Image (tube, rainbow, N blue to C red; front, side):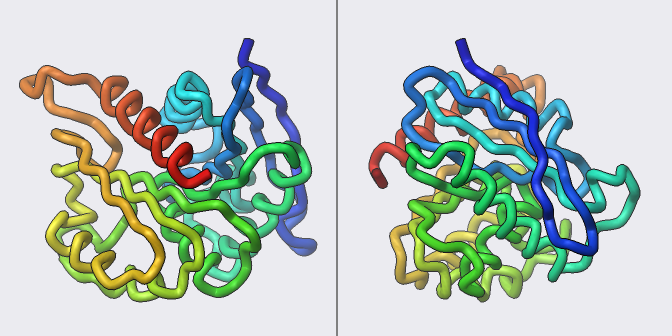
Amino acid sequence: MTSGITGSFEALPERGRVSSLLLRPPAARALLVLGHGAGTNARHPFMERLARALATAGVATFRYNYPYSEAGRGGMDGERVRLTAVQAAVVSARKVAPDLPLFAGGHSMSGRMTTLAAARGLLNDLAGIVAFAFPLHQAGRPDIARAQHLGECAAPLLFLSGDRDRMARLDLLRAAIAGVPVPVRLHVLRGADHSFKVLKRSGRTADDVLAEAAATTARWIGSVI
């Protein structure tokens, strides 16, 4: 039976503690520190379904909140606070599952915050980074400025992006990762948008997309470790 453990850790002294959720399946191959998107939280149904899909694929997850999402208020914390929270989450996750290879990443904003924290040397000894729907640019405003830091990441990178994602035009995403010196893989999720939703006429469901994303992540993790 997959075990779930609720906990908390100090994101940074002046902001107090935030919630964490460890979901560890039997014979887990690795632990993925899994941050949420800008407008959600660790307990959002999307995050729960993604964590369950990863557990089915044999990947344990450590979900966490940022101070702003813990408080349930609108508007994100500043970048420094979010980066510090990512760093604290990785440290906390390593303590709760020291026997598992450690990966980190998340959906949308958290995928970018994790790569940015890694690029700035805030994350040590990660086996790899997984970005679900990396927010390369604002919707309808294509640009690659948000990806300029990727070349400073020292860990292998996996990007899972839908071909209907209006925040990551695929040609620009491919160009942004082309020169990254570490091993990088991009997996395109057919028919998926930024929230991994699909159109009814596609013949697929959002759960199909999550299962594909989770299975791809598990295979990639296996290739890395």
